[in-house]
Length: 488
Image (cartoon, rainbow, N blue to C red; front, top):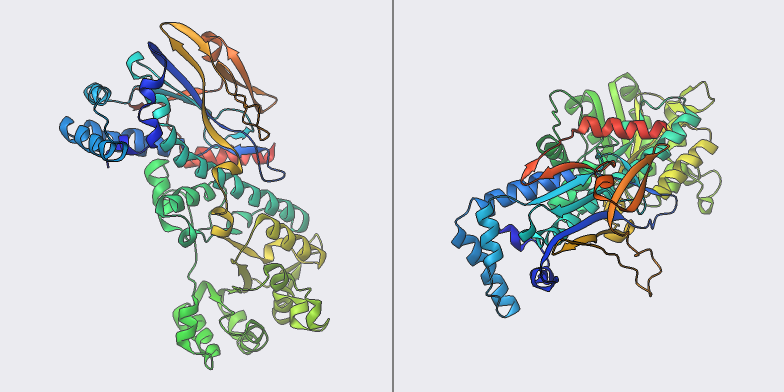
């Protein structure tokens, strides 16, 4: 597709709507307001992908390296058919003749924690005739980056919760990178959403079932799965496997999986195809010796119901002596035992474990960890499958992301511009003029209305200019930056 078509219709004629003799448009990309209680900083992620994928790959392959007649005709045809006529193609011809995107993007390092109302990046044109390009790119820039930042931020919140309970109930965090596992692929709004979100999750964890997120990070973030652990998973069943095995012979299916198909290593088996409680108290009891003697771990996976009650118990409606009141973790403890750690919390035998991946949220994750703690169990007894119920239930407004212009030049005259809607009550007031981001006691802060000299001195550094990626970062660097933020 011609990348000039990767925008909104209302963008295509803004070029003529700006005042005559406009030569510079300077904009920024900023999270304006959090709609998730307790989250006041957003992880910056996705810019390098946007630059490589769209500003370089798409524009080079499908615009600059195509015959001029092809790109003009494909652009003009859509606009003529949809807008009822749009004859002026001089700006398209001029851009094609130039041969590169004449913009400069300055940004904070990816993996940075950025407070609300502090710009993550600024973007401006580098040649006066191409002032229109700056905000023409808003649509594709916004749609590509906001989701990456949002998923990376929410993933980090899971890590904060799991770190907290690891510290309180275990005393180390060795298991935490594996404790939140990305189950979201099939529920995301298309492949690119799954890639971006899955990569954002892998900034904080290594557990994933989203295979292409690993390739994404290798292609766009200098990762190498031959040299580092990008993402990992384990063999696992699904309901079709268990159904085909038959309800009456479910125990035999478990035995075959544990002894013939996967005699060693970790195997996750979905356990509520019919009756979870029978699996726990009959099938697992019958196979107890096999499980305990096996060189590996069986991970039980309930897949329906209220996850808090399923894992932790507490369903008083079934009676205080019921399996539903005990919950999966306590039942597994009764069957397989384990040990009590130095902090006084129970940890299941290493041959058995539990994962839950249906409708997990930050709130449920925290509640499950807290209730396990109150019952005397360490948080490491449960792994969370984090799916689209977490990552797809977000919008651009979750953190109020927006691209807004704050500065321009007309016939050499500087104009500090801003918006401040009188009817607004959700933080849409923009900054004004040229922007400078500084570090103050480890936190980013915005200073607006600065001089050109001051704007050059801030923490926003040139990442892309005139078709060239100037500064590249790696997955390793981003992960290290986030780890450091967790220690501060």
